[in-house]
Length: 69
Ligand code: SF4
Ligand code: SF4
Image (cartoon, rainbow, N blue to C red; front, side, top):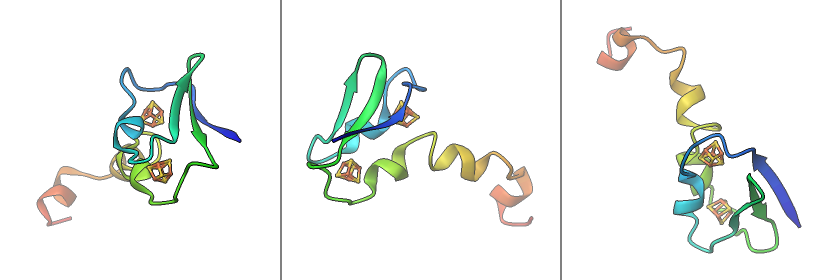
């Protein structure tokens, strides 16, 4: 089954590039996961700007980045 991840938020999908089993599909302007191919490794979540780094870092400060906040 194809599960929608997003409407192609990034110009180039980072999640698609890291999937070792090619379970992430770029079709009709959206990014999907083919759930029958996915092995649940979690790499796409680590690299996806929507689900990981962007949200994790958006509220952080320069002090936090330097380890003093
Ligand atoms: S990296 Fe994440 S937010 Fe960006 S296009 Fe891919 S699935 Fe969407
Ligand atoms: S969890 Fe792993 S196998 Fe599943 S879609 Fe993401 S990168 Fe691919």
